Image 1 (cartoon, rainbow, N blue to C red):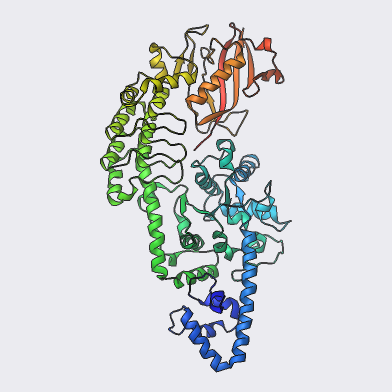
Image 2: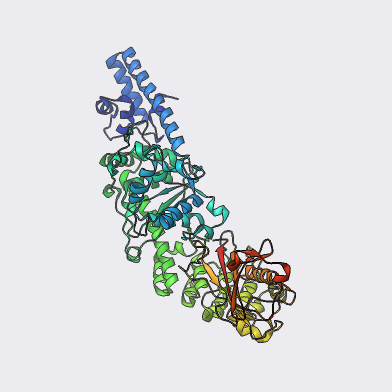
Length: 626
């Protein structure tokens, strides 16, 4: 490797003063002026060769070689030490599961974090105090230790910490829930790198936050400094995320912009996924300022980064264009999805007129839904029509789950728009035979959601190949065959079983309510199946015991809502005004009486008693897939 290559730390074939200063020491500015022949602030390989030839003639060959050798020794030592620091730093990641456990402990148990607590306050009040004795980074203190990270998350310390956490959750699973049980094992295993957890704050700037640890501090340019090694850390990552804040202040921080630039120029480039929530006002009038207006906590860091950006090809002007193009496109896509959610077809049309490339763009934060899929899911007929008239692709499917717009139309949240949405999609030649990840067509989803007699389902019946077999599969999987006169109840999520001992008993299924927490499990949202005395778990004829009845009930719900699974099931029976609470272990096939010391019932005790009335069924569930 030649001298120039070793000096050119970022391998951009342009030496800048900051790079030379690291190895020349005193007199770096004067030496740089000698080497920078055209005085443009950058030393090319040709300039270096020509200028060093002149220096050799001025100093004599031996003196020039001596200076060069000393410079090379400094380069080799710096690279070895810096790569070692970067390698160590890039190993200090954490899993989503570890982060959610941290939130559970600090937010819900110790009450140290609220919705208004900033990330800076988390560092000052939690990270620094809890690592002071060991003088280490916070990742080293996490249960299970640090994990090898896959994704570096850029963020602003002034953003609220829970906004940052939700942005990471969106990146990992397309959800912004803070409940660990709402995520699959694979989602909880995804790993991330955050500066607040990875950097040893006691070797950086903890003294500015009242820490008296006395550990030595290392600033930018020092071999042992960690905060100036972020570009080297990022080159070891497989992806990059950016956590937005409500006011877009994140894009005014010079470190964030520097990380965006590093992601764009990595080999291969790292795609940046924008996550988080931006306020409606900012979405409507976004501004991404020039990097020259960007801020940093330390002016020296800001000047170092701006110097590096200015030295790149195209300088600040090209950097601003790249960042603004990327950011404004992501913001425009967020704005378009907001128009879909609110059902504002005219505003969405105007947005697409300006940015037609957004028409079939997928939401990078979640399932990978397009605008058309989202509109079909919410049942916004004018929006669906607007998108189809502009040529939206009806054949696209979501990542992993394989849901098309027709699948979403079949289970749309607005029953009154069910048929209209499906009719528009079928007219646009949506494929009714397409299968999702559960092996189901849109017809099967519609039968389960609205019933066979619903108008939308009838439209799919006429368009789907082997329609009757699909309907039969839907009915067979639930373990029952609904009667034609039950269609109205079925369409509203209720079922009537005439084979039950009491023909007037109806199972009423309600959706989970955000924010409602089950007392016996505060980390899972509950869903209640009935709240009045005449509602009961399905008692199929072949279900001779309470356990088998409950197991059949669970099998039905798993098929009916395949994205959810049970985490607990509690039954409340009343016999002669004496309430009894039972906990069903669906895996072991056991029934235990909660209000009697969790005593296991004998087989005889589990026999279904026709004189008892099931007054309430409550189960906690979690979502399996994003």
